[in-house]
Image 1 (cartoon, rainbow, N blue to C red):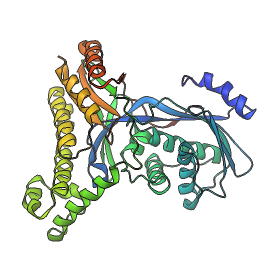
Image 2: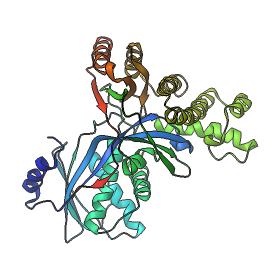
Image 3: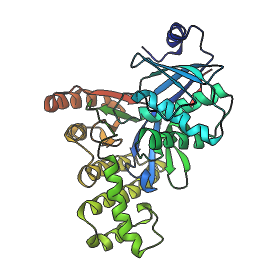
Image 4: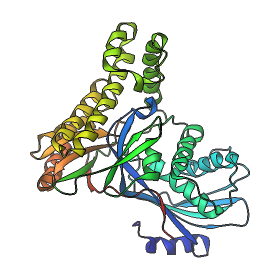
Length: 386
């Protein structure tokens, strides 16, 4: 099933017996640099993608929500009066957003919704954030109210933390809500200040490589990494009360307090602090047109995630190493939480075809997995279609 709205309308009518009254859409994302910094109050630099979650819907006159997933060919039905009981994994994103919205004083209406998505699941391109942001926009549309895009992102984050159970940062929901076409978004995750930074219009392409090694954040080591960061932070904070999170620590300060930390905490902190520095340098490099330097910083980011943060895996490393061998690749790194999922590479336009062929062949040879490649465009954030 394609994501074309005209193809989805008859599916909606066949499931619910009436035409859809509205359609909303929220994109997935790729993070160009700034990984595992957001829950440390740091800096990130993602762009929204032209992969998305689309929801067609109609309001109801009761408190029932009926949701049909095209991807899973399943129907989920629940009452807005009883949101505390968890359901099917995909449905929990819809329920979780309602669970967060209701105590905020919004009057939610029941609705019949169809959910279709083409964000590859388990790939690290934030299908979950796209679901949360699209679900929030669907509740808004059915209920006849509007939420500020930054608050919409915060509601999506709370749904993931409080209902789904993943202690995520704000980046994924923020870029899904506020993305801008042809730009990446520099986000200060502490202040929620942001700046749209133009991406090169020609000469280079952003190529996503899906390792097709799925990952599962709930039950992964994601929450362990947070705790290791906090151990390092707490050591420094005892002596430097101004330090609220690792974002407030310089590389020099980290080295001063390293002897008081266990090795894991030190290495996790070294990644986070150096990654924040790389994000800031990346913005400067792009603004001055130095895409070569931006690529070098992407390479450094992956090496730090692999060696200090330990969230890469063999499949990601094989793909990155193969990418770096291709003439015309300026930089390549894993993107997303890790333990599988995707890489992102900055590739000269004339090398994109060769990149996909050569990286694909080497990856299959070394892993026996078939990768997928996407030459991506930065897209707009969440929006109503009709």
